[in-house]
Image (cartoon, rainbow, N blue to C red):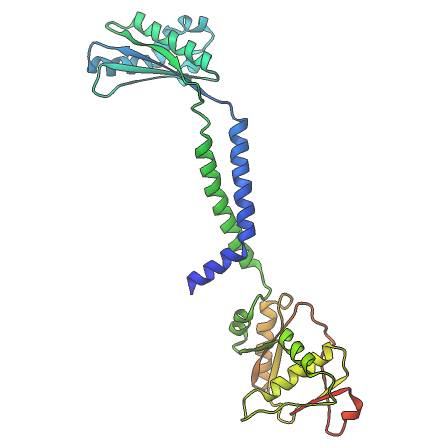
Length: 308
């Protein structure tokens, strides 16, 4: 039951989910496009041993070392803080190699930066040599378009589901027979569309007699429903229901709120007559489409008399 309810919520909010998904992906793509692209330059250094490689990597990434070599890097145009943000070094596991990387806004700038840092390291650190010439990536390492789009999809789905749930929680209108039966505790006996179609099939009649095989089969409810159908069709109609000792609610789906319908069902029960059932009306049904109770012998006053 819970799975069905969750599925119904998602289905009702499918357009909200779709719009949220498209919006989030569009924002992710736009954010990727406006972000500054970052490229990486890389150089490989050779130390005298694996232990020296770890030590050399720590020294190269150290702010103090970068401050000392700042004047040797791109004519001193970088501050020590800028170098610390852009330059990284790590040992290659199981070897005596150190990989030095530098990040910049273009491949050329990244290549120049890592080349100068590597050269300064070779000249300043004992036993460190250049193992491979510096190179730079042709594609940006950030922003990561694919990851951003995936994040946008996840966020869009989450936002859409949340909005769908919130929409259902705030919606107080009626949407179907199940909700009506749950609120009133009475069965939905018919819809106005079905009763209208039945009355149209009957054609112009002076008297419509409703009979059943046994008590409780719905004779009174059917008569009341046909009377309302005739009234909606503009026919002057009277009802003469001899054993109409029960009540019939008309639920206007899409207009009547859940609270109003529940209150109406409670009021009917408190007044005494049993609640026979509910007839589901179309949204914004005519309020004057209600048949008038007629006494026996008053048939000439009406175009049609519905009786049981």
